Image 1 (spheres, rainbow, N blue to C red):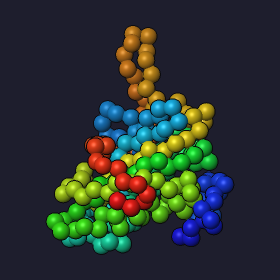
Image 2 (spheres, one colour):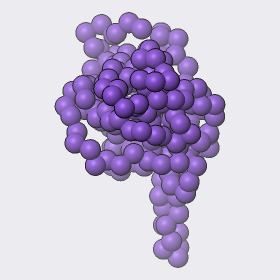
Image 3 (cartoon, one colour):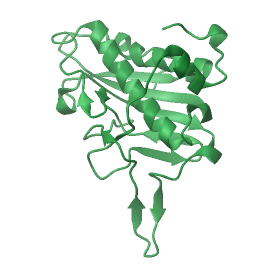
Image 4 (cartoon, rainbow, N blue to C red):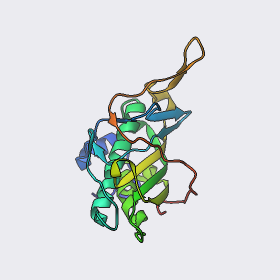
Length: 207
């Protein structure tokens, strides 16, 4: 896909159409936790898998079962799911996204495989294609010996949005008894576990 000229994108929604990119249905978690949390102008996603409308498209370990090209495609598909979550919570439009701040990716890796960064470039390149400079982000790419459902890649993101455009769906709210209530967006499952944000962050799009 071509990169935007000079990194300038005035409308990510128009850019999606220009690139011929369609998004899957916004995924939802399998457990009792929200798929998205908005705090101020920051949108935090639960980790997503390379699924399309409920169908897991990429399984197996990098370095043994999956080619590098397919691994990058799996990461890109994770990115499409992240965009679907962001659009659903940012007023129904990616034009309300101000900046992709951070991406964390887990790569199902066979022993000795050390190209996690190249795999995650599939996701990072997608974000730059859609958002231009606003899609440039800090990134961490980590190896793991296993992922839920034996998925090839799992990813999560932190995205800065226009807080005035944020939809209330999925926000935590307090009912009259003081009990925490969480509404989840309708969609398809993502993963049974969330990525822990304990890894050291790395600047730029390299990990």
